[in-house]
Amino acid sequence: MHIRNLLRYWRCFGVAIVIIIILNLQSQEFQYQYNLACYSAKGNTLPDISEVPPRKGKSIFFHETSCKSLQKGKITITSRQACAVESAAIMNPNLDIYLLYTSPGIIKNEGDESDLFLSALLSYKNVKILHLNYERYINNTPVGNLWKYNKIQSSRYSLSHASDILRYVTLWKYGGIYLDLDVVILKSLEDLPANFAGLQSLTDVAAGVMGFAASGKGHEMAERCLLDLQKNFDGDNWGNNGPGVITRLLLNLCGITNRTKDTNLLELIVDKDCGGFTVFTPTAFYPISYQTWYWYFDEYKLQSMIFNTEDSYAIHTWNKFSANTKVLLNSGMPYFYYAKKYCPKVVAECTRTF
Image (cartoon, rainbow, N blue to C red):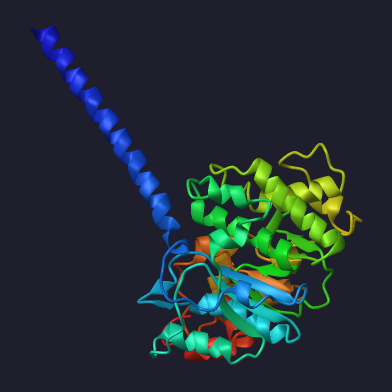
């Protein structure tokens, strides 16, 4: 009798475990679909970028892909995202600055802080805010099947990987410069080489700031990135489809075949002729590493930060780690120092924090 009860217990326990696993998988599947829900959402939208083709090689692109921007039928933006766009507009007056939303929504000036940020951005003649239909945008590109066959949607890091793919598609379509929405531009990018990226450390190339020419070698290299994604897309590896792509391209262009995780790329690819592609030192775009992201919020680091960024084109503030750290208005935090200087109209509309 005791053995029979024990067997019954284990059967019930086994069934419970199976049910938990199934529910967990369903929950994960729902989460993936929810993450990208705005990409297929219906509603009033801004004009689509397909209707207003950019000047090839003469544009800077930002993508808002988070699905957090759609609220009450209108698009929204945070102060830090708006700062990135304004700084690019101020420092690059001869380039068009595109802010592309994957979510539907229109601009409604109802007096919200976000509405004021968007209005501030649109006061610059070179800023253009448009919609981007994700599925249609990547269709008929080398990576179109990644969406068609749900590789992106079922990725463990679906939002991140959707964003990774989009930056390479945009640069393949139009050339120009791609920027993450957590940068502040400190110098003009107009005179940079047509094909470039930057190291974020001694061992890793980053994908947060990149440029490709619209034709010739630049277009060919952008296409190689898409073909790499088509072949090597990995939904379980966070960095494989973003920085991994540009790193693999550079290793190939520079003829590096025996790289390990500790290989010093600074010595191997910076200032080298790698097929017409220029790689900058970390100082150019990532003067503060992600391991020390909190320096942007430490008042005691201000002077050292100013010194460390003297030769930088941009700062990257590592939003993945810093998003929930408050920046007090009129504080001595380094982030606020740069914001006041390089995105003054956005800062002027902030009420409590930046």
